[in-house]
Image (tube, rainbow, N blue to C red):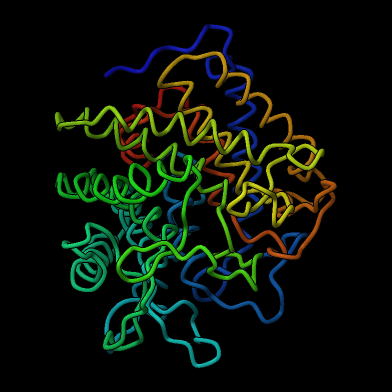
Length: 419
């Protein structure tokens, strides 16, 4: 399998577009620097300020550490110390020194001390990127994250991740989630590169086979998000709370796009490693992209992708979230790299035109994280601008090969389009 070059006129091959992506990346990074707290990183408001009560959260600290490591690997000054700052927080205050693993926040709220697979996948991703960047303490953090995944989260029998546990790991949640397994797949691709251990690619394939080639394909390639402990779909899950930021009711088109891209990364990684690589990885990626575009784009008359759909493919939560469009454009660029097909060029340009018109905030910086159904700034699901990870990767992925994973590609200098 080889990627098919896009036409010379493709934005992927246009120096001005590559320069635009690079400049937008620098703008995003400059905004995100203000998220630094005494310990870890906090959530910025819409003007790029830390609220008075801001405290470190494991998710954002891990995402920032990963993102800043990618910046450092590009040779951008001023980010190495931020990577080190994130490592210190993840290795110290955010880690449960008594029982192992990571808390969601520096001071767990409402007595919650759950250990979630979603968070641990991001810790593993951050540690792997920091290790590729050769930052102090990264290897120990990476070893710790891998050990926790092996001991508590990976289920060899099911070929997927368990969801969450209480603080001492004695009680397991009777739930399985596609979201946590999707980010585990992302982390496993990075772990395969940094450890040179192909078992991570085999695990990623098993997750994708269950969730996408199995459940997703049977649902017209709209991702089923929620399952019980035996992997039976929970179609009514969170119907009373449809706009949940992590476990919304119905199907989430943004995850369909994210999965499409991850399948292509997995395909490329397995080919690069000389491993057996099923043809359905490409076919399923194309189907995911096509069906989620069909059902989510402009379905209520206004431009943009809706957040969620019900099981009859009707919009439920009509807000336009920035991360959904980041993942859609990144998936379009990956499919364009892989196939060279003009339809993906069309979508890639359409999505960037939308993001530039509605989501990118030239006044206060970064991107509006949420728009309402009429594409006006909103904050019903996500307030402020805490997320660097999605937009930063969206401007970086089109400048990198599909494999190896981002940090390793930057370290090897294989991202020839990075400017």
